[in-house]
Image (cartoon, rainbow, N blue to C red; front, side):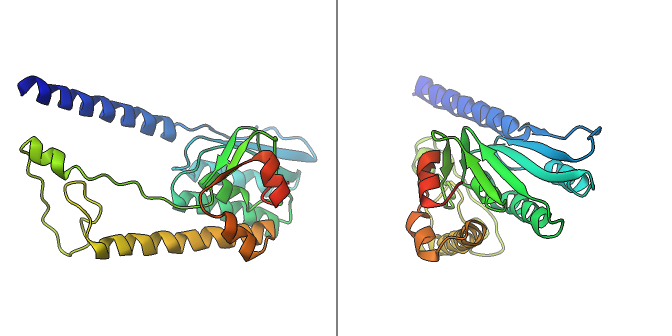
Length: 232
């Protein structure tokens, strides 16, 4: 029994280290600022790589350089599987602001991956350019949870929480979710999903019916995305 418990703990430790490394990699996603020495009549080129979690520097650079008179347009290269909803929406609105307030064209391109939050940000642009084999789309929202209650019982670990309301520990890994908690999370996801679909409809000028049909989390190839109108 002791060896088995030790093996389980070793597995958890390994998973923890991997998750930490993934997190560090996400935080170090390359957001490359443009060159300070831009010449007359230039196009601003920016890159957004990795999981979308922290967008402060990217947004700061986009605001700083896009408003310069000698910048006539913006190209953003995206290689991202998506990320948190809030930061993805921030990118979408900032890209849209450059188009509407500054009246400067914005083109987003990808040659690899532009999914979920990455695609959310992209629909704020005038055009989305993709290679035929790139992966993009994934119009959907997800919350990943895990229930370790049985494992804790097997390891004789008792987890509990002191809380101020019935929903304060919703999603906790030490117990199963109640039906009302599942309904709450589903409502949250549905609300954000609606926001995502509306952004796609407006940005890509697509009918609600078409977007609804394909807004089920599926990923398109670049070729299919162009045929359906989700890319150019």
